[in-house]
Length: 103
Length: 346
Image: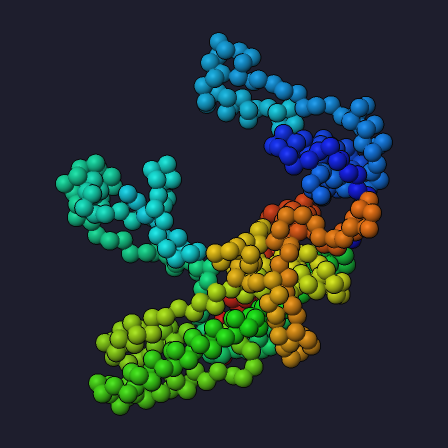
């Protein structure tokens, strides 16, 4: 088994739910990078840690600032109220017609 | 109010109206009415006379129960050797069309063979063997009690003595043992009344309290992570799945939930002639999500030792897909049934 480099995020703690979600969100964002497909995250001494091959604070900063794009937030049920998209069945159909990566 | 029988835990579960789906077999009070055997639901409350349904299919095993359908004792060593013959035979039958030099298939088949060899070794778990001895002892005591009663004929007495003689447990660890109820049902010399009486008196189930395939799989996991030759995640997975109870999650079935299908961390599989030279201590850490490893002193490096069970299964699904895995599982299951039927016929 491999040896992984650890990058500590001491500002992301377990103090509240928002911080917890921030850690999970960071892991999700970094895992989109094809070079870091085996990336892992954990909590150590009450803060978040990212573990992976060829990973560093600089590389993470560079990726987040220059390459990563947040997932687009779309209110699919608001786009066309005339079609009564608010109805459960319509929302369900619409969600199923959109590729996963766009949701 | 409707109730559904939970096979895994052998208890009735109360259902809410949103839990009810087509195809379910439910228990309802006939006094509620509203059901006609010909028409189905009629909402007519006066129709309160309903014939109870007979179960058409064989009930599933509970998580703590092992099915018995054998007429003789079979030691772990004997059964595993039989499996070795059967798996070779079956693989030859199925894969005769495939080119022998296909390296990938050859590797997969080697893993299947390994799984078939080791899939029942977990029955050497102390708890399984102890419960098997207790079960056989209890059955013997009950038969002896029936023998000592005055209302059986000479022929019936001889027949019961012959059954008792088949319940002499071998000194070596066993993998299979006789299902006395089935044996008695097929015995021509016993009267119908006596058969029914014996069946009701011997109506006890074998409950080892652990799933033996989980025990075998944890042993296989130990071999894989310690780098023993030939051991791979696929072999470990196929051992775990051979009864369809243990698959993607290693869950606990005891109240404190810190077990793996009844097996506690630190439980031991004792050494067994021809198979294990030393006792093996089982670990259950892989049931938890995450990777086991060690931190460097300054916490900048993490040396991963093993992955979790869930990750192992996820990797296997990525590599082979669910259909190939199901096919390989079914080979092991079919071989188990074939090996057991050979033992029964013998």
